[in-house]
Length: 533
Image (cartoon, rainbow, N blue to C red; front, side):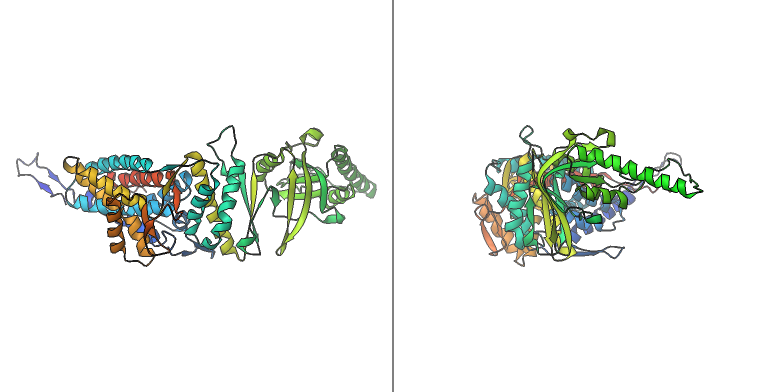
């Protein structure tokens, strides 16, 4: 600790006393809080990591292995610890995978920084040194990466299954990994080959069956049933589909008004008008040859009434009502049609075309499938099945991670070994580099290098191996030049991890290190917490 500077007493006015105790205390408190968050997720790192059961205030239970989900649901009150939660969120946005790794690395760095600060090194010096070290680390990682082509489907599947192996649904990785790869590759736009928008992959969850029944649907799936009022059709071939955003129901007054009707003839007139109004709408719709209607949910008034459903059924038009507003963009992109906001604009050129629209029974409910879409947009739908809600949610999260991994590879086409290999290699190369540096910098870089060993150490620890033996052996192998030697968790020994097909995208590792460093630097720079009421 920096000694408290007490100056020799001069005259009463110029006496000064600098107290650094409070600053150090706050820094230590921040580091301690952030480290405790990191330790909470440390046990869920790697393929043999444990899962966390989260019970929320509303009584909902979540079982997950995903670092971002765990931290997101945790009620963290300490401001510095909140930064680690944000850290895993940003890793989730950038890479989508490695959310646990990034927090564990940040925790290890903080532990090393604590030691450095106790030795009396100034926080700014530590901060600048670990920044330099992180830049060097990214260089080293890039140097050991293997380029990959998008046509090389096997490599993509390997990296997706590596991501899935640490999840609850790891036994299904042979099914989910190819599924993730195919769905991402089908939405890649050839004009912008290195951009993937994951919003183009829609995941629909349906209870019942097992994860084995998960499938990729070339088309659209609605987790709703067709409206069965008045015996409308439930299957239409050669469908002409309209997505409408207006209501097929009698008009309402704009403001809160009540219309008082005194005699029966007036009442009949009103009902007749309503009927004619609806009929004229349906005639317009029918005249374009449309035979499937997707109706957007309406908040102003009922989107459809019993009367309109009856007439639509007579016109042999299949109706799917209550389509969410957020889905409209996805649906119109897939069907290659335009949403119709007003009955006056209802024209044949705004319709989408598909071979079959049908209602299928699945589990305890029904879904609507639209297949064989003409000029289909670059989107795809994954129908996830699961035996219970917990498995279903976790399968969706795991699939999201796998999709993100493939997206990373599309953005930055490099692969890197997994299993703690890159971290040990970094640790070795940074350790060697630190000997070249002068003064405090070398000392700090060496600590940074030691901190990176936490990943292989934790992997070994979670797999029930002896971490010290394993990490020492790993160092030894890397010193002999085996860059890709890593921990093989299944065999419980050290093997060439690339041959075992344990690979991950370069982007996951580089962003984990840069983000963790950035977060640690911010925590180091804070020397006081001011609460404003």
